[in-house]
Structure formats: C-alpha cells, structure tokens
Length: 143
Length: 97
Image (tube, rainbow over all chains, first blue to last red):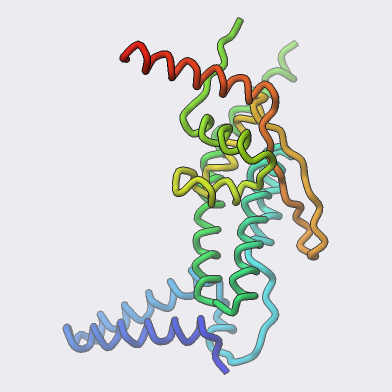
C-alpha cells in the first residue's frame, strides 16, 4: 500500500505531466517536468529512490535527527544547546503531535517548516559563531 | 555605566515572560500572534541570555528522543530593563514625541 505522501507526490507528478501534454505536446518538456518533479519530491520529502518505488513499509526516524548530529558537530555547545537543539525539539514535538492526530499532511508541512526554521537559524548563527571562533583563536595565539 | 539596550522584539519577549513566568520557545511563538518566528526566536533568546535578560533551564523528556526541552524565564535584571524601557517610552509619549 502506498503511503499518503507517496500518493500525493505521484498525483502531483501525473497532474503536471498531463497539464504539459495538454498544453505543449512536447515530449522533451514532459520528460523534463517529470524528471524535476521526481527530483523535487525526493529532495523535499527526504524519500530515497528505493522508498519512492517500493511499497514496503519502512521505519523512519523522526525529522531532525541527522541535523542534530550536524549541528552538534559544527557549532559550540552553547549555540547548540540554546538555539539549534530547541528548534529541532520543537520540530520533533509538532511532527509527532500531527502524526498522533492522524494528520500526515500537517506533519509534512511541519517538517518542511521546521527544516526551513533550522536552516534560517543555522545561517543566521554561522557568521556569529565563525567570528567568535576566530576571536578565540586570535586571543589564544597572541600573548 | 553602559545603558542597556532593548529591541522591540526583545521587549515583546520580555513582556510575555514577565507576564506568564516560564515558557518554552514554541509557546512564545504561539502566544506572539505572528510577531515571533520559529526560525529566529531562539537566536533572539540566545542574544538576550548573553545580555542577562533571560535565563533558561533544560527539562529532560522521557520520550526517547534524547532531546531535552528548554524553559525560558525573565531574570530580575531583564524585568527591570523592561520596566525602565516602558517608562522611557511612556515619558516620550507624554512629551508628545
């Protein structure tokens, strides 16, 4: 059985292809649209190619677990504890709440919004952390 | 003596925290009515913690996520800065500025 998100992606792709066929009847355009729809679907929903085509039930980790590792590795303890981890915690809470309510569409929306928030904070914090790190190194090396 | 600075967003957060006590970041976003965004609220709270306006503590969760929740509250200094900021604002209104 296809999951609702896979059904949604497939429906969107089909709609896009039909629309292009009706309006352009151009084989190359149709192929291009189908290809980019596939790329977007895989990228946006974090599906692997295997998941996309198979009907197997898979166990997924909640969103943000890999990002947590990346943030912990790249940023200082303080930045991670005070800014990035609470963001991922909120994403986790909202995602699980939406799934518990039986609303996978809302869960997907929460996931996209959560990733957006994370990257916004990530790029807002990167220059600050970088300057602090350079300052620390400068202070440590100059007597 | 350095005069403490308070941005509009920081004042908004302090007002919420002084009024409601301890709050999670997500609660702040939800109670702000669109004034605060998820992506920036923790950056602002981190800056406010550096200035000493807010304080935070972690609340361990036993849901297997391994991620604790963080509760924020206004410090006494933060509350005094907010009070002074509001008094200054009110006096400017009274002066007709």
